[in-house]
Length: 81
Image 1 (tube, one colour):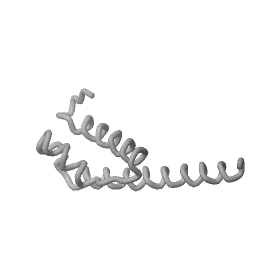
Image 2 (spheres, one colour; image 1 turned 90 degrees about the vertical axis):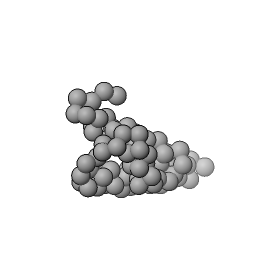
Image 3 (tube, helix red, strand yellow; image 1 turned 180 degrees about the vertical axis):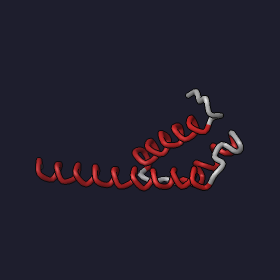
Image 4 (cartoon, helix red, strand yellow; image 1 turned 120 degrees about the vertical axis):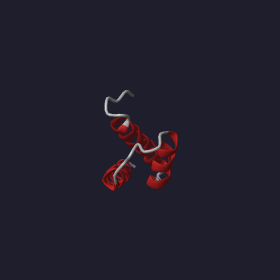
């Protein structure tokens, strides 16, 4: 991923994609560790607390979407069987 703004948008995109994959594969997520990993690779990538708050808000939305999709899947499988 290429970013004209010093990597901020690219890192946010990659973090969001990683969050989605981790929720789907492991059903768990640690936003702090993920942000720490990206910060270690590129120090100062997120300069403001609002940047990290954005990741936490996205994680909340991803989890609620994941929960609702799983409950719908469980409901449909119970109807079919």
